[in-house]
Each structure stands twice: as structure tokens, then as C-alpha cells.
Image 1: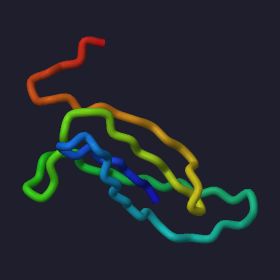
Image 2 (image 1 turned 90 degrees about the vertical axis):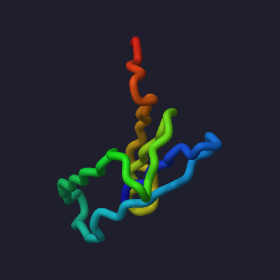
Image 3 (image 1 turned 120 degrees about the horizontal axis):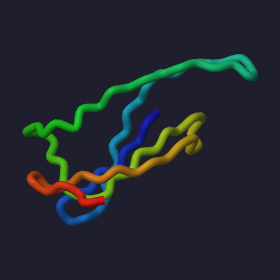
Image 4 (image 1 turned 135 degrees about the vertical axis):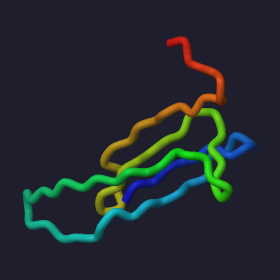
Length: 79
């Protein structure tokens, strides 16, 4: 599954979970999965500026973590 910590207006993270697929692999097996998540503004979801975290969980344990920044409209980061 993929878990996002979206920043809310009060600057606190709010988790959102996206389940990809449940499957069983043989030992040393592998599978390639992909997921596209839109960051477009919707009436049901507003994205607030700040640093947001995404984490990939495998068997309930973190496998990869990254962060990304959402900047206010009209503001472009200088670095």
C-alpha cells in the first residue's frame, strides 16, 4: 500500500492510504506495481502548501519513503 501524509490547513499531517494489490510471492520473487495519483484540486480534496510525505509499505513495514513540496499557486521555488 501507499500512504500519504497530506498537510492540512492547521499544518498537521492527515494520512491517506491507497491500497495497490494484495498478492503472494514465492521467496525471492518480484513484481512491478505502479499507481498514478492526481494532485489536481478537487472540491472534495484541497492540497495545502508545505512538505508532504509518501511511504510505501510492504507487509505492513516501510519499504521506501520520500517527501515532496507543494508550493502556493504563483510561487516558484528558487532552488
